[in-house]
Length: 326
Image 1 (cartoon, helix red, strand yellow):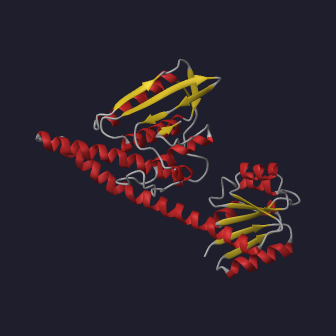
Image 2 (cartoon, helix red, strand yellow; image 1 turned 180 degrees about the horizontal axis):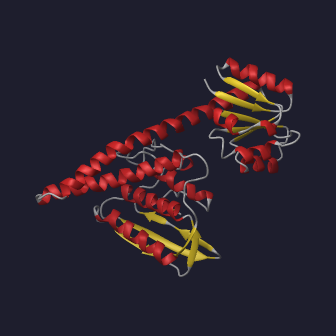
Image 3 (spheres, rainbow, N blue to C red; image 1 turned 90 degrees about the horizontal axis):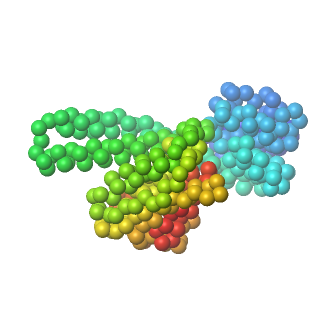
């Protein structure tokens, strides 16, 4: 059962939505004046249905006011179906847009779909929290072992455990970003020299490629600086490099060409691996997508490109068919 808040100035529509959604086992509260929606109502709700054209405070203004208070899907129900209206609704924080008149079956199906995604996000958040303690135990014990007198083989094993722990810590941090409420967790924007970004990516690429004897080149670091969400950008490039190393054969080649022109910075990751099948390109940036038979699945969680893809909200993200990412 979910708690659903309906905000619409039409009493008959509120009654219809309440009756329909209660048949699905939900608890529904209706409000006919958006100005009466407060923080307590938002925290109570698992899903909010908003009319747009309401007297006093319209749906767009209400969504903008409560978006940071409501950690749940917000669906607009409205007769305003022009593209500009849809974009406005999504831009102020709406998750979906259903045009009036709508079929009640479609509304119930969309609410159910959003609630399923919300539940999955909550489960992932709980799992991420539960992973932190055992991960701390593993990495802490490995650090203690590293302080002891070890044979060369034992030290190599301990160092492998520590490297694996660091990767797991990064996955946990990325999962926390993925399930976090509110604005994207990419940190504040900062101005950084392109040279420093390139040096960091060069070091990361060389470290990832060394074990498989893959030749790595970071090409053409331009002069100047950029203002970026550096945490998100470093994460995106790191995941693309990791993905390239995973599928590039031993002794292969990976390059990271950088190019600046016209006020834009282009970052490419190109590898000599098998590339993506045509059918996988449309789903490559979806979380947990691992069904592409053209690429091995061992140890692959289907999250690498998903965590790289948020960069597309601040630029352009493309997956190429011959192992090229740009």
